[in-house]
Image (tube, rainbow, N blue to C red; front, side, top):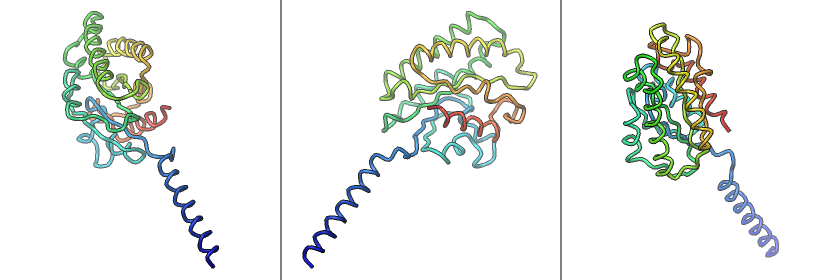
Length: 211
């Protein structure tokens, strides 16, 4: 009887330790995302409850959002001022620059675009050097082409911006969320320029698909 009890006790200890180790090392733990920037990521006021980008992403991952509707590049440090990811594996997603282009570069001007992009680069690099995040966990959204005719005049500017972004990301080991090709249908947008439920779903699929 004593030997049987001892064997049972040892078995229970083995099971406990196995479960504890698996809980600590489980690769299926949900990813963690921090969404920073503008209404491409903070689109909840433009869609029904539960259909925003952050709501759809939260079905698959842990999500924190500091992005704000109407935000510009200069607002990003303020968004992050009181927030620092506790987990260094957190994926930090940036969508910023679109509102700057809409308000500051109404017509194509290569010098103005490059000057604005320098501001963008300096902001991202400063954040990279401040937050405990590896470069491969920084995800930069490029800028999509809204299908409404009133935004056609920005197409050339967006193309130039996205090329600069590709080069910048490649040089620093950042990832790109390529919404410029992911969102290209009328149904992907609401209020002419904001991600719709469908568009947001495409963004989430592309985001969670990044390795």
